[in-house]
Length: 438
Image 1 (cartoon, helix red, strand yellow):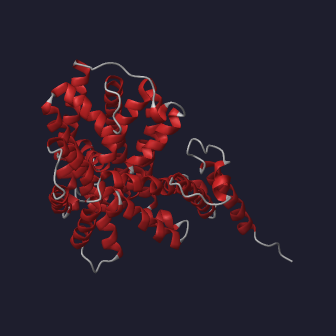
Image 2 (image 1 turned 90 degrees about the vertical axis):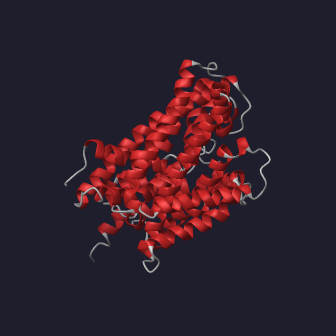
Image 3 (image 1 turned 180 degrees about the vertical axis):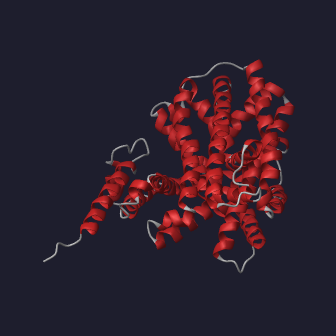
């Protein structure tokens, strides 16, 4: 088979959607709607850029480049090793995988067991990661299990809430509040970081390629083309689902103000729409969404480390990541989110600039020094900004960062990235010209 078409391609795209759509994807769009209120769709524009556009472009950039190590290797071998490791640890056992268990526990168990003893979370996490681990043992079968089964079930359950809102809406959009009283577009963009999908996109291509090959597509160019097409399908589904969740959050926030996160927003709404059955419905949605993402993350992380260290089998890597994630998840959702914010503020801008450079490689490839200079400037600024947001002030440097354009919008890395790219192009030209003959 030279390519995938029709329902085969759609189910691969739905598999990628299922891998993307996890804990943060459920939490942040409704909270955006609840806070943005009448400015919801402007905020959604910013959110869609960073939570849909950049992840899909990341899939495209990595597919065209031949993998994240190749793309990052254009900056330098040491950077490629360190950055790739940081990416996999962030979306793997360090942050994203443990968050899937902690979030689904908060939504599937806590509402029914308010005073749950301390042993309940570890037992739940053990069961959750065991199920995810067993499914992840066969990464080439994810389209059959996520794309054809769990993904469609998840979409149907979300549509049940949407239909309830349309038939029996609790009210209209409220006034903007919280972080959305100003800089609505940029705040939506920054909130898109929390889904972690852009950095996940740099890795999911490995598993999507395996599933495409499992369906008989063997030519590398065809695999790349099908991976990109699956990315656009996943992006379209994400846009629809995010819009639904943002609308749900907006009508819920206008009627039931006071929720401190997206989980609270959804809980208030489904309880009003469906009573006690609403909690069961919402719990199922969170468990399925988080399980899908956990399986995808187990698969891509284990596949990468198996390629790096083939002496340890793929399945053993899955077990190792499951054990580490189990212990991290016990810290609880609030602790994981608190740690993730500064880390994402430091990593995300670097990932964004790397994706843009990769997409523009027909141009930037003629100026190879544009990669290290742009990434270097971006990395320095984003790390200092992240430390400042975490309360760690560096003498002189923090003040310098605060004076950069777009600092208040959280995009102070943008101008340095452009400057670094231009400097890299300039030095690339000098290198090509070389010293004049004597």
